[in-house]
Length: 138
Image (cartoon, rainbow, N blue to C red; front, top):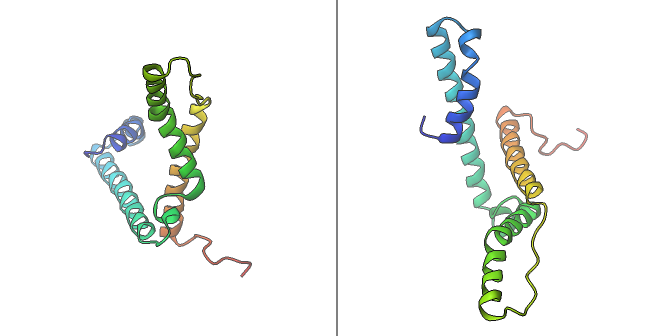
């Protein structure tokens, strides 16, 4: 596969397979099926992304609404805005107080990665037909 993250995940999963599936042909077939399932999941996410991108609202089409925008803005400030503001302050107004720095960036990244994971799980639910769309006590 040419997708680095998937290769890393597959390497972790495949390592114990030599002990669990001693037959080389069976192990090869299992590896192939595993890769195909991961690729199918990725294609399903692409379809969901296409549908979201067609929505007329920027808050739906742009990404996962409020929390996604907050995480994105906070990460942009932390990695770009803060350094640029601090550089401008030092270059043009050194007597001015420093701009506020964000604490808890690890938590922000955790929330962001969790959201991305939940989006993937939601896609799996929709593909398997077990999502709760329209469920109101029926």
